[in-house]
Image (cartoon, rainbow, N blue to C red):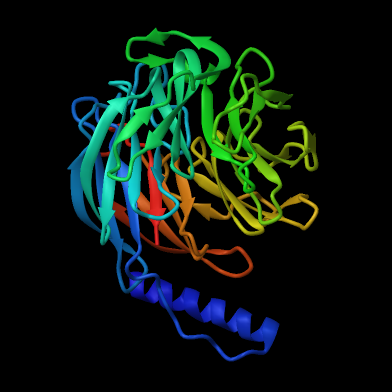
Length: 391
């Protein structure tokens, strides 16, 4: 079935390519040798599963390795599938040598070395705060977002052997103070994601606020990697700005969970954000996670078990790829969360904690998604969260 589905997708892709450009069909490379990593977030012993792309474009599970820390499972203050309320819980280094993972239950960060796709645990350190949920890297420094209690971003030096060293005085406060209730804060009011702007000048953070408008905070970054003491803050139109990414022209795209929408922004020289397209709704529910590649962006809508696709023009304006806002439907109760492109933009990987699977799509040139199949990873409704892709 996977082979037939992929073959149909290839025919559509190459037909469209040939019609649009009148060029010879290129040789086919399905990304064999690329790897996908999924975190269990297990409350007793956190772990990471290694999946390898096969000849048909799907994934085969080849390894599960413990992080040395613990996750939080399904959490206590929110039902599945979102115990961490975050994006970028797993992060592959830019050179593909390291994989970093958060352990929210033990407030630790783990470092794995990557050799031919396989993982080896190299270090486990305190995260510099409580409830780490998101990671970002710039050069030889790792930045950790701790979202519980007095939330902060803490910076670590990455050693040549993968060992992490917290840089003294590097913590920067987000401005939220959300206490733990059991083993989890109220994720409707926590900071969500870290990511650098493409030029490395700004470290962006999204912050949810269920009682009003959320915010997007940008920390200026010095040449040595140190962050400004205070961020430049822009209010969101939505209480829950969640996942975000940058398009090929460096516009910031942010998903909005409460309104089931996406907004786009220009990043000004002083760090302020100027809206371009404001709250382009997709008609779905719980639009939390967002992945970008070039001029395309997709959201995972956990409340309706769907994916919504957007096209971004050269000025940063957004439009839906389909009139009904649905680019793909997943099984009822799948509750898609973490969503990532392969680095070449040809594959879209989607976690579905409701089923315990990862779903793989082939991305056609016009943004249509061809389903290649799903791969069981961890038990359904166990709280798995975190996704990274290495080509």
